[in-house]
Length: 376
Ligand code: FES
Image (cartoon, rainbow, N blue to C red; front, side, top):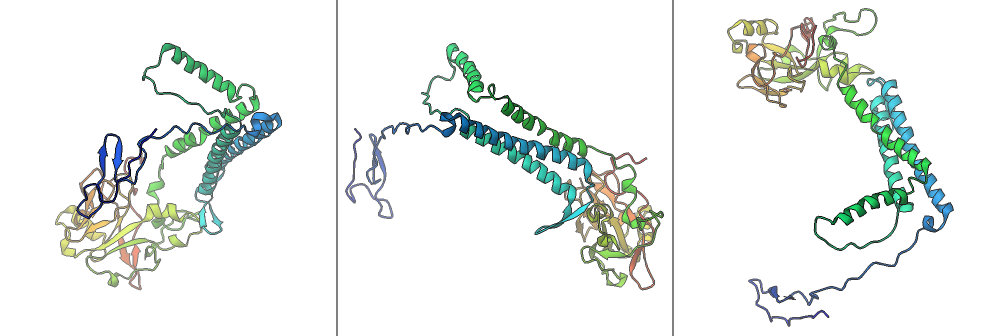
């Protein structure tokens, strides 16, 4: 039997705060209030058979429930596949408590979520109701099993397949197999979808080109520059030297659909330099020529892989991309002076209208964004 040792207060050496010290001594723990030094094995609780173990009707009912859950997963996966092809990612819907969001994202997310939920709940319910429910005790043994035991493992697997009733219940086997097999399709579609299609000339046309409705799809209308997200036009006289604005073409934020996609291509940084700060070379002169009295506008989309270039160092006039540290020199037409980007940021030529507001003098003359695409 276990032996208890309860020290009387103050019997052990006290620590600096006056507490009794804990000391290990031949299997006894002193100063812990008399914990036993060994415990009796409580053994396993008595086995309680489940309904499905005793009643074939209950087992059948459980099987139907599991099949139902796997069927839910199958339907959700099929819904995902249909939604993938049916919805234009730019199509927006209103969702209560959330607001406007992409119909494609909503249905794809719901499809994949329900699909996983069906498989998860089905597997748990199957395990709780139909799979073997025996407690077993396995003693520790050397890591490598005897040949006989290894053969036993193989036999256990076979017995497991039998005991899980896969072989006896073909409907359950078909439902589980189809749910798991189909579930491989959405990730494959996602991978295939994100590999393409190539943008072709999509990056050569932005909202700076003008209205996108009607026949005159890319008619140039000299849009005003507006602050993002305030959507207010900017007077050239309000832009002080050293200031930076995130700007968009007027009208973009008022679009009903596709604001995010258009914004991702048309985002521009507006910076004012002292005209004397521009480099005295061809690049510096071109940048100044396309500016309005030293106010320059450059695409904010990094030419490496498309992160937003958002860090401006006022003293050096460098623009930094936070993703891989590509650095662009604003005084030299945003030419790359460090990092993996291979192409300068495209400049937007700007001027002012009759009221002194900044407007685009012409659309971008080259494609914005990553430069590894086929540009044609
Ligand atoms: S995306 Fe800008 S450096 Fe890589």
